[in-house]
Image 1 (cartoon, rainbow, N blue to C red):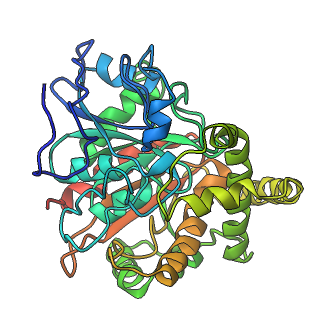
Image 2 (image 1 turned 180 degrees about the horizontal axis):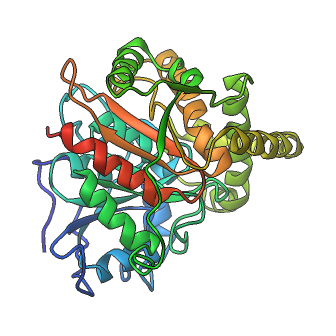
Length: 401
């Protein structure tokens, strides 16, 4: 059994590795799998990135369905990866277990909350890793670390055996070092293999640019993405926010997520009074202090915004949208810089989040030592088509640390 050393990504949970063999033979034979510490592995405690959560929960009885599906397809679990505490962060720092190392720049953060999974893939310590994504916790670290990743349509992958955070936004996502493996893992997770051959292949998605979402990104991200879109002759323009203020998308997400945290994590926090890191504790305090009356207003807003977005988005379209508004944050970023990052990152993440849409991320050629990235959203249920799109576009743009 492996134990952690000072070498590698720093993305592994401390102590002996949680290792499990494959349970079947399939498209993922020999693939090394990392599993975020929010997802159950039979016989292991799901620690949620927090020692007090780990101490107050018994080992899981069963694998989460997402773990079981990948093991059945031939993947073997090689360890549990660090999560930001109870998934309440996009930065990739954990006060108890540390920050996994960024694959290109040690002065940068890897992004969270699926920080360990993204870092382990980027450092080639695993081939594939599971994460969770509520407001961007797969998409942001994928963009920061330059790896391929997928947030599926909400509800496509069961959330059984996954620590609940804000279930109406929660999804199980996954990371891979190349888009072909991302696609193969997606087939196993989404149950695509059973349907292959039974349906006529869908046509390729028509590529468009969500210009208002692109405008939220910093120039260092926005300009290379815009140049790449021109190179790819993506000239159809769309509006992610439909003329509404992007800040409303952020505010709606922040309130609705907070109220769901009250319902699903709040009782444990009030009972256990856990130790949270200095950056995380105020977030939970603010969430638990929210007035439930705000929920009705923003729930109605969300339903209307999602419906209008579905009307704007053609069923055969994929929209280019930043997965994060900037390159990987500096470890020395101050509170103001982090706050500005959060507003824009969550507003970008909320486009897929409010409407339950799938979103894929993959790396483009490196610039200034850091990986720019492309990301596309599409209509609900277009998960396989997005994975096919990434596999088609990504091979020309390999990403290796």
